[in-house]
Length: 485
Image 1 (spheres, rainbow, N blue to C red):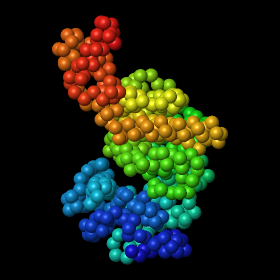
Image 2 (image 1 turned 90 degrees about the vertical axis):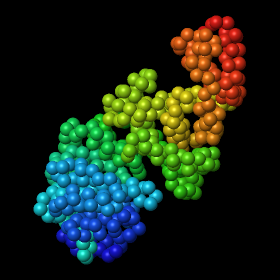
Image 3 (image 1 turned 45 degrees about the vertical axis):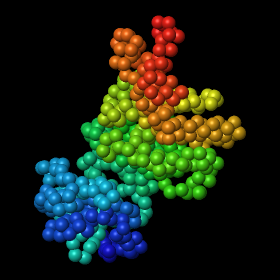
């Protein structure tokens, strides 16, 4: 696919030729979509154009049209079997969600020109590197009135106009995210404008701030982005309190740790002693870890992102989990399920630190108790604990501690993933009604204590039948002689 450049500076055309658009970077449905839009004057805009010029895969598409966005979007959804949503009736903003052959989701947004022409539309956008458009009709051309291609080449984040942040203060956060994820530099004058405009974030909805922040947490370079938020004074608009001095290092370690599981094996990345040992001990779980981190408790927000949030909130002094979850949900607008996961993750990380300080041999019942209390958040906590200690083994004593931590982590993860029905969630042999009927015990907390005692014994000795469960409880009640268990 050949492209030319319409810009105030024609000399940038060589940049496009160097980075010839690679069709493989486009979603598989792209040609079908553009064929359906053939009768409209549609332009591909924003991040998709930026990523194409950077030779990066495009995961979402944004089209700007001069008119009739709703009918155009609905036609695409109907013809390609997608879901259709009107996001803003007045501005004719629509979204279509498509699925490819591998069930991967593609989000396609349709917006009305802001202004009468595509150039006017681009002038109202945030940064030069996202203020480019691709004319999908005829001789395909990249429209670049603000020299965004040159800023891509130079690795710069520059505002399209002086009013860009006044128009939408959320762009302050977006500048930081783009700089981190692209490894670009925010120009000094843009940083100054961010500092002047940040009070406007008070008027931005918490949900929009959350969504932009979670895009940053999706990486890469989360630690650099978080540090930039702190340096620019933006961090308090997102999370309570100050960023503790050691937190960026912990976040960098977490990035490194996850990269060992999420990226293809890289000998150079794993050459460091502590990382190499981690891969040796836990590399067998690479595919399982990937699946775990990809889980979404709500659509669009993954456990991977939540692990970074748990780390950032790790300094909070929390009480019991229900109250802690409520407190966290007041700080960051999360679903109940996410808030509980984060609260459990914070508590579990502290619990895991205590477990790794002990030198005794771990037992299956310890695995049961840990995951019974913290659920799948316990898995995140184990890795967060390892991340805190990664690359911190200079002395022989520290190296031995790292070996013991990895061995304990492997034991617990093996229990969770390989012995789940024996160590984590043994089958129910008796319920509360059975205990009431068999032992004539009134409903109350004692029933729950007996059930928990039974489940722990299942983990210890492998009880498998109702009869074995009854015999065990009979013996326990006899030994207790009526006292509380």
